Length: 109
Image (cartoon, rainbow, N blue to C red; front, side, top):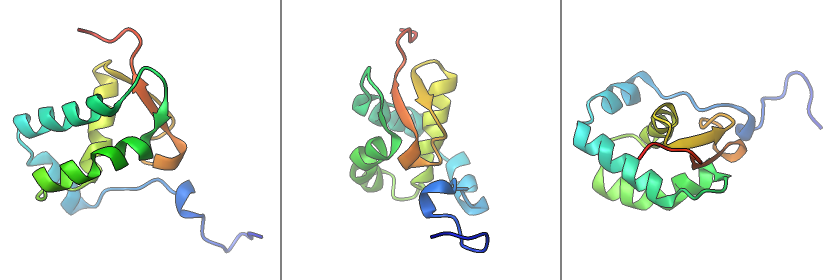
């Protein structure tokens, strides 16, 4: 049972990247960003899947290839892919367990 003084469960609090993580994300090269985008797109399907699943599927490769970049870059790039019209997102990617992502049905080629 929860009361007003209990902290929200982790799944209901959106992750907020730290200032240091944001600086590291901004330092990523265009080539690195494009490669991360491809990692994400490779795991997306035309039907919705949990953002947490896509992060989990890309986690190991991302960590191995880009140990200097924060994992929050995955979610930041998902937002960018949505802005580019390549994916559709239902919910807030920063709440991984409560949001979903899929390839856009009318995505640009």
